[in-house]
Image (cartoon, rainbow, N blue to C red):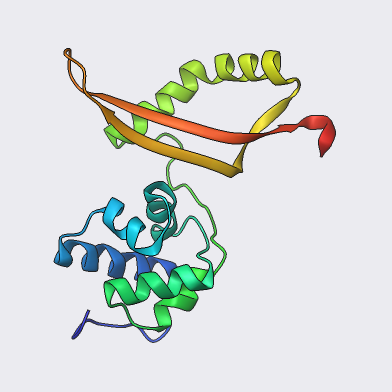
Length: 155
């Protein structure tokens, strides 16, 4: 990112903008970036968008891979403040996921309670993958989520 503007005091938003610019300029994919830093594409994108704190070694690897200013590494290591700007998302892809949770959330909750007991699925001890599945009626998006079960009585 030579000859790019670097603010005096970088924020997570500044670093996210630098990441997106470097990714676009280099023609990279999230899969490729994730492979470079040895993390999952889901986690890598989320962390690059400011929703996760990078471990020091991963922050340094990302900064080196994308040619970001060294100061960006410490910003990537900062704990995030997770704020959603909209009550109901308007982006069509994100809205459909919101709709799925609205329609199937009570069903998922009921089935978790039947199979595990009174509790929740962790979104901290959590894995997710997004896979393209060929189908004669049109390719499918397969989202797999796996979170540790946390019983309410175990808190």
